[in-house]
Length: 452
Image 1: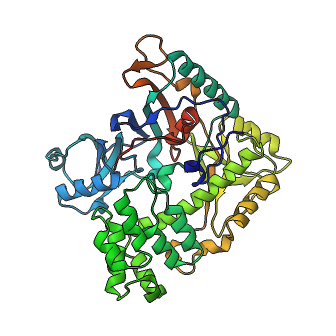
Image 2: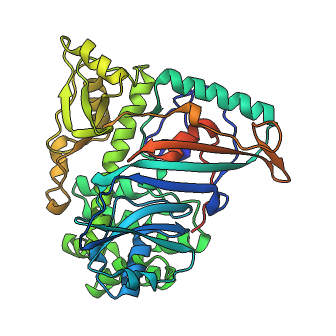
Image 3: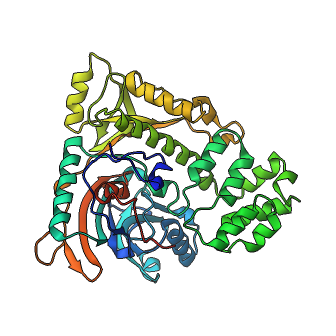
């Protein structure tokens, strides 16, 4: 069993699913190395919602939506989309805007953004419209020959085919690519410790940050005024939280009470606050899935006591789950093999029903090691962040035959002054992470040149 590097282990991804050596290399050396095309179903007809196809380079989805709203002089609440996309990438997705004309949109000019009008619809775009995403990804700087690159990719692809797909881990984007802290903050909130949640968010630093940022963060544990003075303006949320604490006459943690820290927390947008709890749920899910791999339990085969969900329009419908009994196990596994059912694991919440059998043992073990109970997800100290819980497939389908490697000669890889580069093309269903697929092929600790 091949262990993950520390960068993965800190977010609960303890193992690789495949044993073969990876190709190494660097991901996202530039935005055009990571191309994402959204696949969604939107019914076009007459309606008040203008449907657009937006292609952007190095733009955060939320920031772009705010910029479009500003240009149109409308509330950003009138703009909807199916899901956020990577910032450091070239991405294409659909958005809907309520109550604007085609001519108003045609007048918009934004650097590194192109907008195409598709038509109109009677309802806004939502997550339910999303089927998945097509990816075209270039890995650069591979220090292997072309033939060896091909051999390793073929070996890993064969392993993935035997497994039945790729483990459906939550990728680093869920936790913070440069500063994976969201799940740590979430754990403190679930445990009811708002002070630790606030101080962790402001003060915890990582080696990926500059020395100046690390020093500013360290000051948050002893001197809010000096921390704010030295905190870069780009860290607007941290600055806003520190400013709120100072406004409430707190100069250091010992001078604050719970209400002071609660006020600082509430400076953050509600979506971000909820993301903390979601990230902690994702971390626990990753641990459950890692321990399933550790015990050698198949990911594409339902065990007695597992839960499965069923396919709806080709997509896993996690709102419909059923526990696998001994009497139904064979029938359930026929559906799993046919892609009509999916083994799931919980995103823990206060209404979660734990599995039975070995899966249940794993879930209870993860909760015990984290010193968490299901009831804790009621988040009594911050009830607006409470979560009932849900489920997520433990395996994401992946067609290894869809992997393509660009070449100038052999059809396996392309050599240049910066070494060999390989190109991958594949489709993933919604809520699956391309970076999780690529870590299996690279085995290099997810080395990435992504910039802010």
